[in-house]
Image (cartoon, rainbow, N blue to C red; front, side):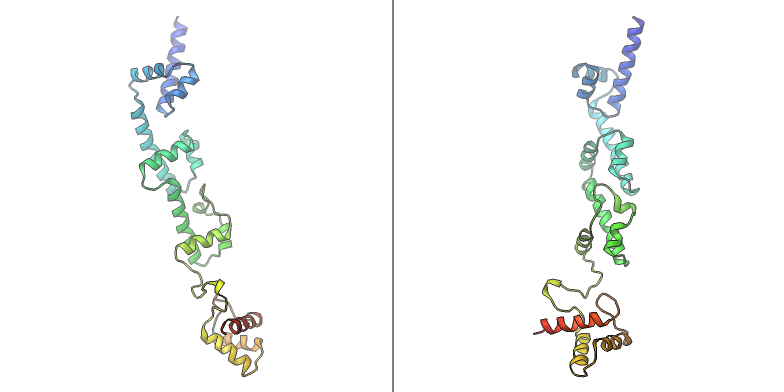
Length: 228
């Protein structure tokens, strides 16, 4: 009789711990082979009400997830120490906040990408970075086009002079293009000499690079083709 009471008390203690941790009554009932009504009776007898436990858990985990965002933790890391499944955490967070967890993480990531891009980092460098904000699950960027989409949406262009490439032609200034055309057609300079003269003047291409024989030649022919 005594052993049966000890066994019963142990089982009840386990049930209460599971209830406190937020596990649903039907799941507890199935584990112990009891009815949902019986689990509810045990809960009520010990002052546990499902709605109250759920509310406390939601409030607690909402704080933890906001903290996770600040500390650049992934949702999987929160799952490990919270013991709640991913779907439950997402649901609770979305109910308590105007923006979803994923959206907040994505916005934080995009802000970091834009800042890096403006500072001079290339899309290729950004994709290979292991900066915590860029590795957050489930929104890790994996290709260059994704970086370009983020920066373009933010209205940031690393090289503002570059227009829509589909239109064709050269994006260099009229002054540079006219100088190349005049030097080649009137003065009969070589493209190599023209490039050297442009560099002497301290001029740069639209991408901030020095003029070379190849890129000067390309600019001349593009301008000639699309200026007609």
